[in-house]
Length: 436
Image 1 (cartoon, one colour):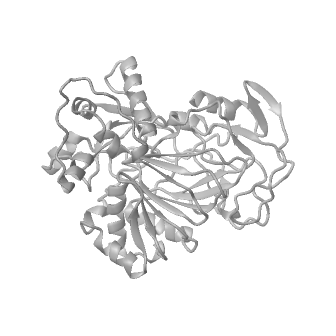
Image 2: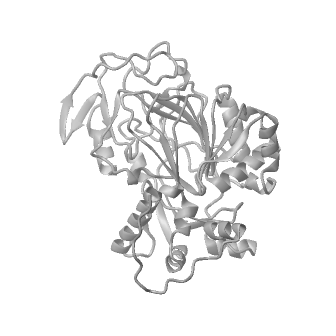
Image 3: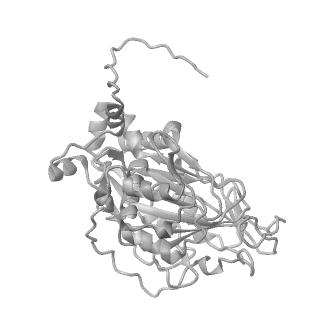
């Protein structure tokens, strides 16, 4: 996968299509006119297009962009030239704001209800939408703390119609949760003073290469190679297609709960290597000197969220290269199984169809996410603010440091409902049954 990306961006000039190994010069085909704001339709022009690998692609303006009347030109992707890389990131002392929350996020709930809104879960395992005329920039300190707890419990929380949320307010909200991450290689807004903001961008100049990836491989957590990977993360979409380019979030809590007890214990004993080298290599055709040099970091396969105390699978095919101390065949098998577990658990994967001005806030520690690359050649443009969280905590470390027992999400749910655990498998043949 990464080889495909590196080859494309390093060896094929921008504006050249590469199809089945053959370079083909091509002009863009006629597409719908942009309405200048949020329809997501691309403009017709004579610029050339490039095939991109979504596995490592976040967004570049390969052509002239959406046009002069586009209202968000200051936030188009930009890669400033550098003469040298920045030093490695320092260590941040972080205390999760969710630890200061009301146990039931009561203050946030009161804030929402006072404004005629509702907090609704999308699925049992993951995803919540906050409905009503709720403006994120009006949240106070206590409501933000409760929001941190809600996101830690639900994985991802959605807000519609956040048109009044400025990038400054979005960054302020992110800073409440932790120091803002500066991406080692990705583009930042053209405005020039927003190094801690990631631009998410695709238009008719960047066509997904459907031969370069599988859908399961697109599920990932952001920049997990960092020593202190992100926690509560905020994405606001400025421009979206009318249909398509949804995002899916899959619960790491639920993946852990789906495993047998022996498998849970086995994975709790393991660590994995998270590497930034492939991502850095995929960018060398765009920026020769990255903001920071790539690193590799070892993290536990099962981490514990410091607020909920729940165990979550913390691996993803985007950055995890192998398990530590495990033969390659075994490592590949286990990582492939976990990759498919995230992609296949339909009962614990929430899908969001974006509208202009929507905001999603998710916890990168406990969910993997993936966009759908189905809306080419439409325009999609967003801004992501990505606060750091703590260094991932293993089950052993959590229980040793806190004196508390780390928990299984599904077991805790069953306890709260008064449901007894399943009887132990008796080894007898069980018939497959089908229900509508």
